[in-house]
Image (cartoon, rainbow, N blue to C red; front, side):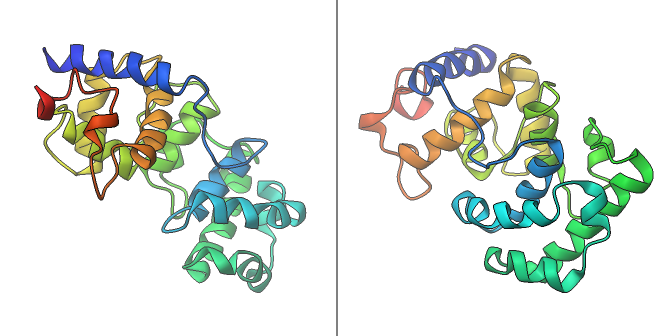
Length: 208
């Protein structure tokens, strides 16, 4: 089975297993998803979802975040870890979006990665979930699964993203990334690949 065929088969199998897979972060618009994703670095989505309601109540958009008091933002996000760096980034994001983009979150990876603290993973998530563009979000679960399936042979996020863009159907790529997160938590975990319970057994090189 060629890599592209294996990738397309994996897409179909995980669609059946997780038909309603969506991002687990809670948000109402592009700005909130962007901020929540920045907060999720080295922090669980569950913790971020506990923090963001109060944060967005005070700073719901780029303009309000741009003029936020640093100490207040630090206080609100303190339990997310690395809060001092993240607080500076959040205010910086608000200022840049307000000053350079008229308060509207940009819709390209290139523009999004110009924002403070925003990498390609975050940028792809916003482009895919908000703007409906083909996206490859290189979460650690996604990288691990793609390697175990023999689709890539690298853990470098940019190389994984580049290769998987060639292999995945563009209209399926973003949802597939969400499904690999769930699958990576439930079955093909970092600690152990539970092959006996795996729906990908038939296409996984480790089982062939």
